[in-house]
Image (cartoon, rainbow over all chains, first blue to last red; front, side):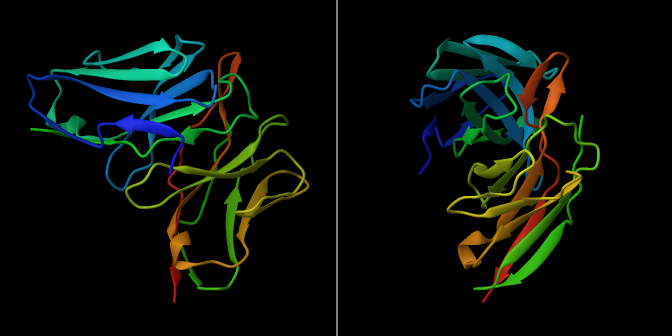
Length: 115
Length: 113
């Protein structure tokens, strides 16, 4: 079991749909992250939020829109995705973002399929 | 940014110690070494991290060389459930900020009966 909860576990969406991925943690962490993982590849960093403010955007296309409504919640809004966006989307949190001594805690991800 | 080099795959017999090496020759003085693992279809799991001293917890031990250019993760009694991809990571700095994790390719550890 993980202390970072992601919903839904699986999502199938068409290229014209709008959907959202949700992530929640109750460990009091002030940094939250989105990663994308394609099959047989390592996770790739997408976004970092620190104290509910976006601090890092790794040049992610605008069809992915993150949102951090409060320190416990992180959303990823999806619109007009392409089939190549199909992947496992991982959320993580850590006590602080600007620290070398702050392990990340990951959820088990949302498996997204774009048709 | 410090990069890490790991063997792509390793095998280990069940019940034996698994020793996973990592080279991080460009690490800077204040960068920690982190180890994570990812079991199939799950999110990465934090294992252990250290700066320069050896570290041990309930999952593993981390041995860091004195020059900090390499480290070894030790699973003392590997089980079939330890079969996973193991990532050795040193955080990359973004300008003046610190500590965001970029994953390399990792080592696929297969524990065999």
